[in-house]
Length: 464
Image (cartoon, rainbow, N blue to C red; front, side):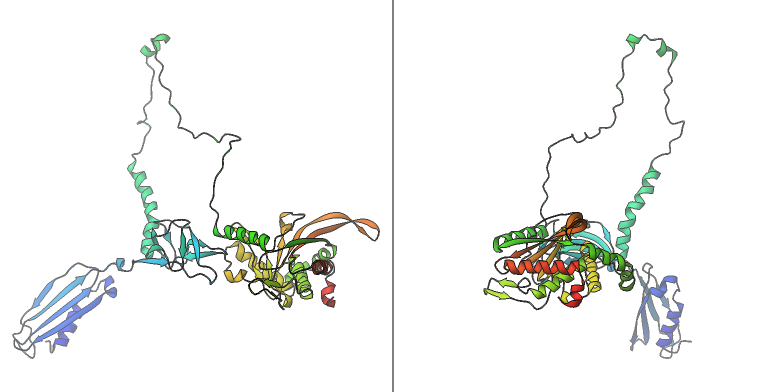
């Protein structure tokens, strides 16, 4: 006997089918009570993966209120779909740094490609660096809103993404599913199905003049090979970084009164020091000992000794700015152009700190992960053309700096040592400076200071 509508509701709930998908269903029930007819109506809605259900009527159910009342309840099933979660979102251009206002888009993905969360969809090339735009979620690229090479600003829409792992799985599985279907459609060929031409006796009896020649089977057309020595050319649009580099180098030539002085450095002592201590240095600091740390530290020592080389002219206020800190930019060649990440506060670093910083910045440059903050500033630049085998050259100042040091390759050359000719590993170094600020005396003294420290690192310990 049902004592109340609540017990009726409980009995209906217990009578519902218990399928495996019921754990993901939702039950919505409403109970109405008619005072005048003394009857109850109970409606239940079950959200489940089934079609619309049944209407069940129970009669002559004895209740306290009315023995002859009729209780009517409905059970309805509503089918749900994962399509609700696969919505299309628009991904906008991320914000740039303060000194950057726009960039050019280079697409890594196309329409219909499936992407994972945080997978790079495109790169935005700016004047200083490239900004990667990852996918905010797994899904499928529905539309590219900017053409390849198009210019965008911060906040502009880039592409539309259909979110959902199911959509990405469908896009990935679609090409794979077509392969078995195509192979199944082709009928299997047997040996008997291949026609074989058997010459007859009549054909053999024909005279040669009566036999008409048949057209030979022509091979597939092969594209003609490139003619040797052909005079061809192609045009490629300059990326924004290359354009900016060209603009800054031309500005340096037009603004600075550039002059270059040269010297040569005997690398015997620094090579011997590296040979003796490289294993212990690697074991202690977990980084290899190179020659760049010696030149960077020697440059910082010389810059503190000659503040005019570390200074800069402010053309707006017509003032000379002297710095009491040393931030050295190290030129790094990348496929997209020359970048100059900055090693900050070099005057406080030792050889291990410098090597670790150079290694980290070089790794970021090779992986195109340098940020604008990594290249901002810098009071002096070192360019090492020796890694490419350069023997001699004149570097160009990186504005607004006032000087740049050019390193070159190490080659064995005959030199006079104590009145005798000896073969020593020698390197030419060049210092290009802005003659508006730096005089020849300061420039030559600066370069000789670097020469003395690299040839004998004990000068650093003695602060000489």
